[in-house]
Image 1 (cartoon, rainbow, N blue to C red):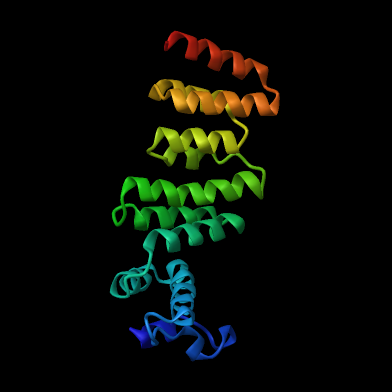
Image 2: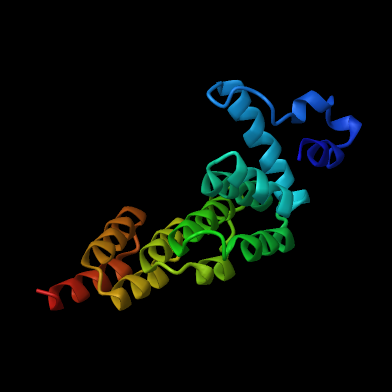
Length: 181
């Protein structure tokens, strides 16, 4: 497996020891190096990265979220879609939502974009609400929250709308909340 890893990196990316999987599994430097190697490999050779993650019991969701955020930061939408396709069957829906959420937050906060397609990929209504609020889509966030019947989410949207000065959404939330009592 180590030989396959070294073959995935060019000499310009550093000496082979920088891509080593060997070391004490309890050593912080070894763990960090393995995480760095697997994050890089996830984009280049997903099958190898997947094997390493599970052979070395590395935190898959954390790695996938970091890769998703990195791809979103570089606006690599096609690679991001490929990543989601590769991991979809390997992690739970909630974990997949966490990975997609990492990409959404980069688009919302760094690029100031509204990643509607990514929001639609989320399975959790709660995460859809949080993502819409992060993107400034308060009416859509209210729609997701009210459709799911979550009083807490509607209250959250109301609080955020009030903070942003969007009184029309605050009124919609208050009206919906008054009917729930």
